[in-house]
Image (cartoon, rainbow, N blue to C red; front, side, top):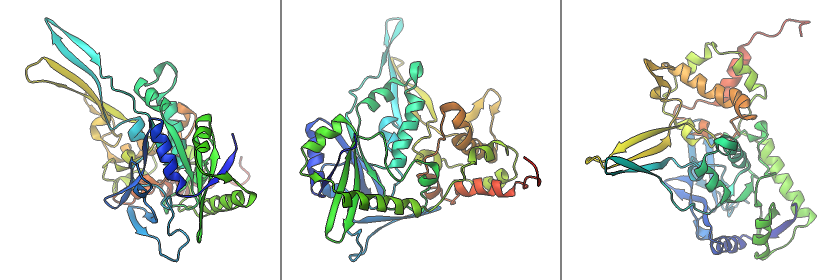
Length: 381
């Protein structure tokens, strides 16, 4: 579907109300402790109205845009915060099963809960790409994760094309943004031009068409579409970072590069980068038993390849040194992920750069290894 309409900002409240009537729990951007996070949204005023984020390596600040700025009342003027949508599709903590003692044995029950019917409001292009990547990981044939599949089937996606790039964004160089192209039910492009504040809405599914039909709207004109495209193009041209398109080959051919030791001297192995990453999926399980021995349960929780025990086998961890763990993460993310899932594991959202407490920049690390390689001999292939 390619139908486009235009709505005014107040129509978003009608959209939220329509989603609630459908039985969806609306999750969208909210302000919390000086950051934009994802949580329940019931009213238009819940959104981070007029907020602009300043992001750089190891730096994140929110500010209200100046009153004479055309972004003053923008609802989606920020880039992304520390949260990603994976916390709702692949929760940080999850009970897998319970066991109860019965006579001389145990009865094991799968932990079944009602699957929430979410509507994600404000999904960026890089985040849609991340959801598609996790679909390949968790919803893949006979090895599909049943919990992920059930949650994923029940989600409506209200996307937002970016008209502003954050300081650590590099989705243009990974081909995953800033324009939303596929995988959405509705896609909003926000246009703020003085007092003329409106949204161009693209309809991407039958469910999206049903929602659009209840909104007060008018057909999109050529000037609306052209302005939306200009703003998206401007965001693409003003990315804060860029990733070398040959990153996979650069990393794959340099497993013993001295740069790994250099970055390890700064890396805290805190796992911030993997926790904020929208595609990282490492997890561990833990078992617990009640004191009287009658009940037990198994839980799955997020883990990280930066944790020393993550690679533990009999005799100790495989990756003892920080250099080995950082190399594992970045090489898997940008290189060997292609062999596993047919795509890069990175969508250029920049979260790992912003939320690294020492400001390690994944794009700079790739560039440093690339620039240290000797040039090919003249006349060589």
